[in-house]
Structures are given as C-alpha cells and as structure tokens.
Amino acid sequence: MTTVLLIEDELELSRVLKSYLEKAGYTVLAAARGDTGLALFNQQKPDLVVLDLNLPGMDGLDVAREIRRKGNCPLMMVTARVEETDRLIGLELGADDYVIKPYSPREVVARVRAVLRRSACSSGPAVQSLKADGLEINLESHEVRRNGERVDLTPTEFNLLTTMAAEPGRVFSRLQLLEAGQGVAYEGYERSIDAHIKNLRAKIETDPKKPHYIQTVFGVGYRFLSRQA
Image (cartoon, rainbow, N blue to C red; front, top):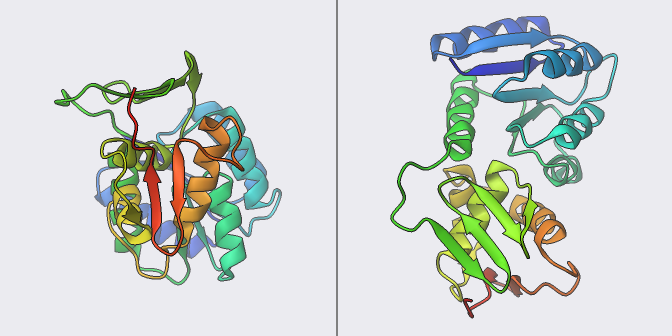
C-alpha cells in the first residue's frame, strides 16, 4: 500500500487531511514537528511527503532540503505562505507541487494522486528512450543519463523533460508545461514552471546560463533542441 508522510503542526487540520487520505486508500504517517517528521521520513521511507513549511523544531524548507539531499521522493508543500517568492523557493528546492492554505482536503488528495501518478514508471511505452546530443531518457525505467552519467530528476522534472524531448523543436507555453508536469493546469501557477526549468537546466546542462537542451522562447515558453542524435 502507498504510504504518505504528513508533516503538519495544525493538529485538527492534520487529523482531517489524514482521514481523507486514508479514505482514498493511503497509509498515512503523521508528524507535528519538522525534526520528528524528518526522522520519520528517514525511518519509514514513504512514497510521498506532504510538508507544511511553518513547523516547530525545524523549518519546513530545511526539511525539504534534507529530503531532496537524500533522493527524489515525491514532495508536496502545503503552507499559508502566499508570497510568490516563497512558492518559487519551494519549487526550486524540488517540490513537485505547492498548495496554499486554506485548501480543500479533496483538492490535496487529488494532487497527491497526480504527483504519485507522475512518479510511477510507465508500463510498456511505445518508445522506450529518447536521445539527443549525449542525453538519453529511458521512459520505461524513468532514468536520465548525460554522457553516460545518471542524472536524478524529480517526477515533475522528468515529466517536463520527456514532454519537450518527445517533440523537439516544438514551443510549449508555460500553461501547457504546467499541465504536463502537474497533470492539470492551475491558473496563476504558470510561473512555477520557470523554477522547474531552472532546476532541470542545473542538472542536465553543461552551462545552465547558456542552455543547450532546453531553450527559452521569449514571450512564449520553452522548447527542446530541434536536432536529435
């Protein structure tokens, strides 16, 4: 059974969200502090983490950094911080989604499903790999290698990369990429794509400031290089 770790210090909110997630079929572990939540993450290795940012014991952003340092477990941030800069910091740390309070528990459950769906390996794709100038994307194993070396991507980063690489040269708007990465396009979140693209470039480009694979089309969006290997 899929295990979700919920790190939330508002106990009533945690209780309600835990109930909704359990009714949706998930096993839910809960922690009310950042430090105890991180310890639980290290012990239990959950399939997804729902993380509040305003936490006692250890700030949520520091928890996120530690989770990302240890791997690419799907990570959803839930917070009352409404400033766009806070959201972009969270996404740049590798969050797969970012939900602002107050929210509907049903919406959170739907987003959990979407993130887990993106993180699941594809079964028997028609095309098993995409290649371009030293970059190889294995669609079956969800592995990416650049010049033979493995590159670890979050589920959202992988989906964005494969979406663009499958149609090299095509220009994708931020809204189109948001739908590809999140499973649904949430209005007002288009700029979050910039944070994911920044993370992607840092991982796959030789010089992220002069990107080769992911090119910016000013005023429109992004495209993958048109020349395939």
